[in-house]
Image 1: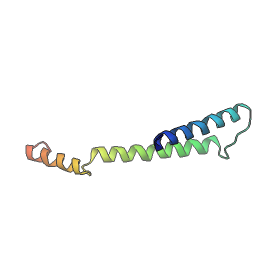
Image 2: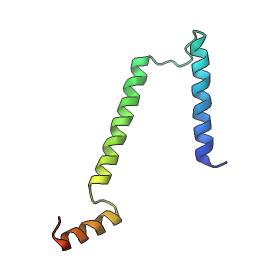
Image 3: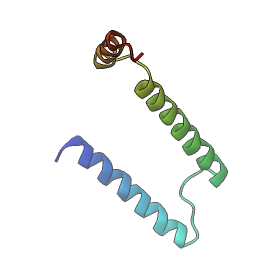
Image 4: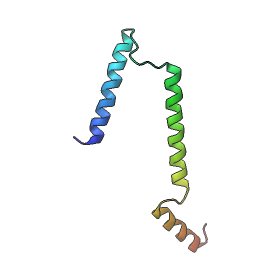
Length: 76
């Protein structure tokens, strides 16, 4: 198995164990729902910001080459 499969399987097992324990009234995680929500939304916001910045700016070698072509054609 590759590292990605191991990571996804581990996360799935942790989520399943957490769900079963929660169904029986025991919260194994020491965080409140609000704290989890804040962290998850923060991570998603930072991730989306970085992806949008990377995609919309010419920071990679390929992007710089594309910008050069656009400038040569007068489109940028």
